[in-house]
Length: 63
Image 1 (cartoon, helix red, strand yellow):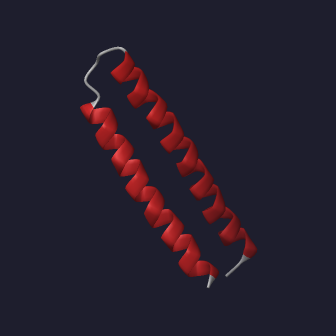
Image 2: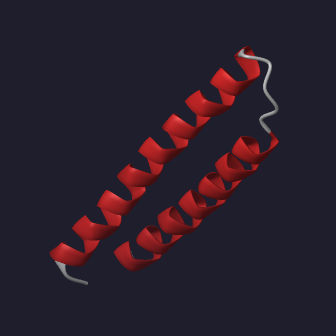
């Protein structure tokens, strides 16, 4: 595997972490304001599931 591909995969993982952190902020903000956060929570779950896939893919290619 090339170093460039591994670097790209690492960037995807880091970007995923940022998306998850931001979505957690959005969910918390909605809850603090008394808004329904159902869709925001579903999106957060989707981001978290995708992140697990990105990490697994990266880890497979590292081996």
